[in-house]
Image (tube, rainbow, N blue to C red; front, side, top):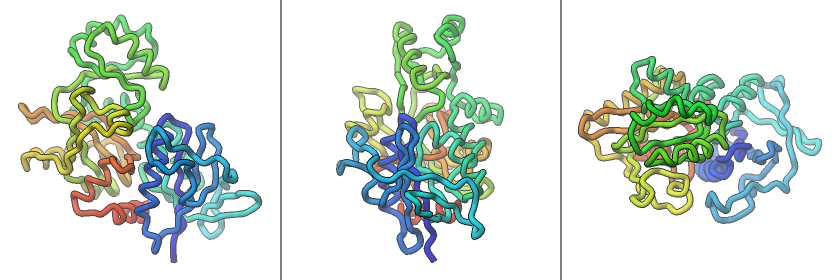
Length: 352
């Protein structure tokens, strides 16, 4: 008997469009012999819309600067408790629609930060990904770093700013990092709101920019090394790690920016990364250690840096709802590690 999967996409965050593209990838890989999709697109205002799986967006081109949620469809509401048969229920235009489990593919705030997970936990609906607490912890890069550092996991050095007035007392520490620096919102992804700066003249403007997206930002030492990612899948105690992948940013930009990821396709990725066997094993163990320290579940993508000269590894961040877009490395790393895209989606849903 097929299970009906509630696929939640879009959302209120600045990663709304990336979520729509990820949903497109998941719907294309879903095993229709096992699962029946029920697509709900959440608008930027937070309104839930019921969709068929082919008409939840309004343009044919799957690009972050073109795709938009179709908001002409009926709105829908979620019943805040389980039915007697253990299923969830949605209501739209007087019609009740039941579902068995959920796949929240909502990147960023109001989706990846524990809010939707807390709602689903309250209703007791199974869902893909980490629980409420781990989702919140991993969404906040400052908290992630604090927990991992206490567990002996090296992290990229940084300071946290909540108001521009806090900048001056920290200038000596910031200058000690050297340049380049990265200034980023603490609780956002997809490189939204991030600035790479090469002089102190740019610092205040970069902090102002980051604080437009969040009430807290990080000023982070730029690690001169290789940018790597490693995927993790499964329950914390028996999770598995992928072969790592490497990102080669475009020389004219110098880092993996939003434009380089989603708009001009100027970055290169190498899957799997060319690494010495012992370094590859260390990266996989490092990623699993971070996954367990943060109490992740289901899936995560661990972003890190490797300094070739010393083989030092530094954690950048952990994403509990990694992308499933055409350029996303999480599914590509699993494909390189022996699990096809469709099989990966099946494993995630079966482990919900």
